[in-house]
Structures are given as structure tokens and as C-alpha cells.
Length: 98
Image 1 (cartoon, rainbow, N blue to C red):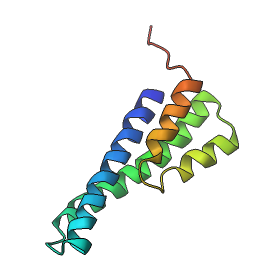
Image 2 (tube, rainbow, N blue to C red):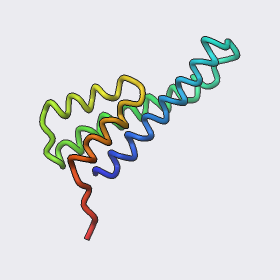
Image 3 (cartoon, rainbow, N blue to C red):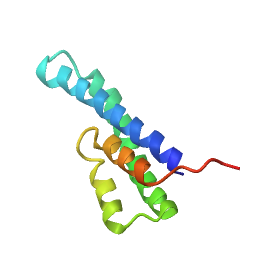
Image 4 (cartoon, rainbow, N blue to C red):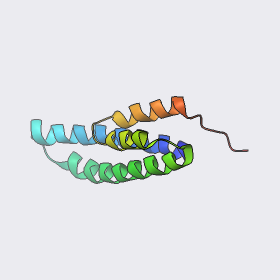
């Protein structure tokens, strides 16, 4: 589960990057909204997956309620899901399957 959490956290941050680039072209450059149409739904889906990954990983790793809330809040600002993932990776070792 923690490996899946890592993958989803990085993917969520990458979708933020795509969405921000799309928003730049839509609102600043004024050249179209294709990027937002593509990355908006992708980011929305990854946002929901990230929240689910936080909750499931918290159950598996025994994270505190405060840690879970911090993890969920980190889905909102761009790229903080990576910060949270790194923080938890340093605190929760990922075990190798036997």
C-alpha cells in the first residue's frame, strides 16, 4: 500500500504541474483551454486517489489522526503531496515482499 501511496503522490503532483501549465496558457497567454480540459479531469481523479491512498496507507502504517489530516491537506497546495510522501517515507520504511 505504501508503494502505491508513493506512486499516487508523485502522479498527483505531476498532474498539478500539467494543470498549472494549462491554466497559464488559458488565462495568461490566452491561447486556449486544451491543457485545462486535459489535465483538469486527470488532476481531479488523482486528487481523489491521493486522498484514498492517504487513508489506506494511514491504516496500514498506523499514522496518527494529525498525520492523516496533514496528508489530506497536502493534496490542496501544488506539489505538497511530494513533500508529505517524502516525510512519511523517512518515517515509515517500506518493507520488501517475502
